[in-house]
Image 1 (cartoon, rainbow, N blue to C red):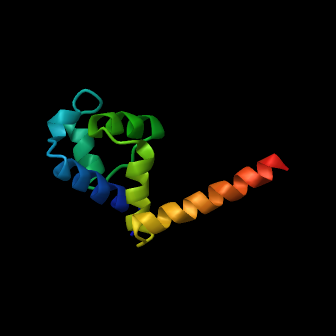
Image 2: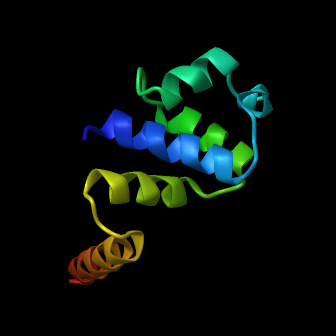
Length: 96
């Protein structure tokens, strides 16, 4: 699976779970653009991801965690443990 496909599945799933229509995103993006994202035809910039997440009422890292969980075929909680370990390691390097 490629990143744009993982993002498409994630966005479509979250939108469905949260009972949102593509039109609900009209304050930040056109319905056409949301459709393209959900079909894996395009991938958002970080700015657009942040705007989409405001409509979802989720932090962008939550959405990306779910996305990379699908991409890496790894449960989200395991992925978060890995990220936490990596961040802790980087913090210790920064303190040296």
